[in-house]
Amino acid sequence: MIMFKLKHVLSLITLLVLSTILAACGGDEGGSADGGEGSSGETYDWRFVTEEVDGQVQYEYAEEFAKRMNEKSDGAVNIDVYEFGGLGSETDQVEQLQNGAVELAVMSPGFTGNMVKEGQIFALHFLFPDSVEKTQEILNDSEALNTDLRERYEEFSISPLSYWTEGAMQWTSSGTALEEPADFQNFKMRTQTSPLILESYRAYDAEPTPMSWSELYTALDRGTVEGQENPIFFIGDASFYEVQDYMTVSNHNNYVAMTTVNTEWYEGLNDEMKTMVDETVQEMQQWVFDEQKAQNEEWLETIRNDEENPTEIVELTEEQRQMFKDKAMPVRDFYRENVSTVDGEILDKLQEEISAATE
Ligand code: 6CS
Image (cartoon, rainbow, N blue to C red; front, side, top):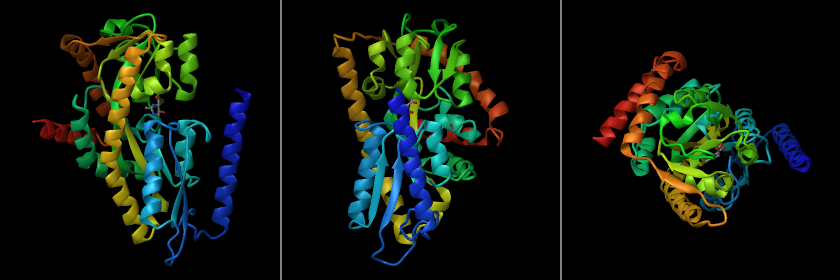
């Protein structure tokens, strides 16, 4: 454990020293805040941090993104991809993007809620359609998200260039299967750090505890927390199911990730580079949809068939889901009245877009 922490600290120091040297050199290498605008023949060295590790969806996304950028630029763009863990917690990584220590990051809104209040819109249960495919279409096309919410993030030097789903979220638990709101009574639920996520679980009378996922396996194993939410591939790959008794297929929300860039760096890119980044971000939307789908399907089978680590898989009936929906609806009013800085306008617009897309 001490070695693990030491590795984080050393990686972080290396990254910060590297950033300082690059900035001091005047920055025509693209790692600087001015984005490396320059003559042809120039090379660009950028850093891309993710909240996941090798093999998981975010990391695979960043690797594929880096590969495509390198190919399109004939080797001029070199992107170093960082796995989660080397550079600190998810919240540390948000700060690294903001201060330009890294240029690109896959970021979950669930870790920015103390800062970008509107981004907590993704914490609302049962907001997006049950279909993951339909949800992805909305994420691609939504003006509420791609224009209005983006502007809120840019106030903090974070530009979300795209939103994409990592799959529908499910609950896992030990001791009791989560089948109706009463099962959450005093249930110790791990959440990400955005306050509205905690509020969503308080609506079911649970006891939410925010923590980084790096601590979650141990916390579940020791019973510090009794359950958590995540897409199936993550429940599998992070081995959470091995220390849980039940997985409830609740589809209560979609896990949304954002491809983000440091705003000042992005605005300083020359036209050719900016276009290349934008085009690659757009192409990656279908790629990552297929990737999460394949990983979620494979892991569902693996969890189902793992006899050494048996997990009871519980499917909610429509009646049970309705009981959760009834409890979740007032959280939207809470968002409008106590969280939103624009009187819920982004939520209203997004709800109209969702209605139009699902009619
Ligand atoms: O539960 C979490 O915090 C993690 N879950 C996913 C699917 N990706 C990264 C994130 O930090």
